Length: 256
Image (cartoon, rainbow, N blue to C red; front, side, top):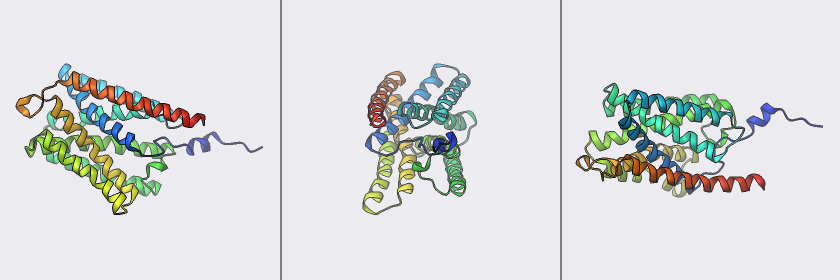
């Protein structure tokens, strides 16, 4: 009788969504927007240092659950992504507000760090495809890059909205147009699928963050002044509904 090695079985199971569908991108955009809003609310509701510590602990807990999971499970994956979104926002905000790094510098810095991570990941594993996230090392590479995309997107959104004075709504519309470019490139111009995915993935962050800021920020800075709690509640509700739908579909797939 052939016996499977637990290690080999672990390496053969994907830890991220097997297919990238519209609901994936909707959920991703909701988590990026919610991360911005929840981070802003926490920083204003309590001491910033305490908020960052809570965010770090929540991220560590969610990532521990995700990394220990034997396979992709929608609610676990999106919980981790949500915590990454919150902490990634905090990291970018601390870089500017706490340390005083200009938005342009932090945007360029996070972009360089992300590029370096992609280079190291590709040289180590030979591919950046999310369909190859079947080993612990590849999953660590994946989440490190994801955290950096959130920090980069937050810094880029603030750079265009504040430093370039485009405002939150205009920034959101600008990044939405950029976000749609890889879809056109992939379906019409035969772009490489891996490149198109990461192109779109990176720009989901400034899209969500810009629109979240537009909804929650005071009118004097270009927002609708709906407030952090209301915007956060609506976005989190959307995430819960989207993830529940994916969880039910995933369960049917596992049973079948």
